[in-house]
Length: 290
Image 1: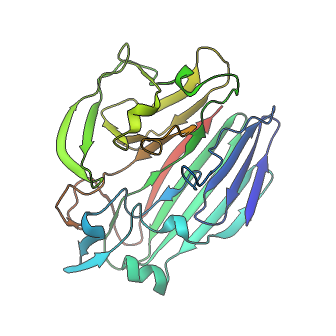
Image 2: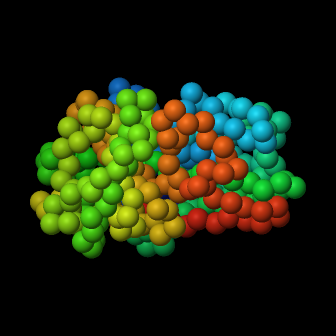
């Protein structure tokens, strides 16, 4: 099921599958969200829960036993239920069941709220721990954006603007797309800008920490731009399909990292995971503005 929200500034479409944002258009009908061409990447902007990236051997440890889980968790593959809808807002929900318990043995409720405010789409993600045991998990988002936004421009005409100067740290990936454990300064142009070129992603994602939490995709040659704000997530993945000329870029705020290479994560002790005690609720707010 596709739900449509609109105001005078933008129109947004959200799928019940995974609660995924699948379209965001401005008043001139410019499409900002990646179209999902399967030649490069079939998704649009999936929600990532309860883990981010790859687990070593697709395995993790919890409650003293080994379990299996695929890349980016499983929320993106489940149908969510509509709780409430208006012209400018949508509330979707997923409750754990016997199927999810086989993948992640906790009782929980996930609620996703989409709301339009002018030229901003505000998103609130909540996890309610309905279990008698502590929950520990990761949360992230994976929105892809069409590049170029103006068909007269090229991919290389665009850049990411971090809005303030910084020297982020890059977390290096292995050939298995796990964290190598190595980290180094990532040089931005003028300590603020990342000019786009396809070769940036020949070795998969750029994963940063210690960077500003607002990023704008745009070009000096055009007025159209899109800004992602993620105040509560310490990591940022930047990605498109490796070794291709894919006409999109993903701006991916994450609360946690993929597994360290060769390490089977223990969810109870993974240091960057979110902790939610029984009957408590975790809330994360982020937004996309045009």
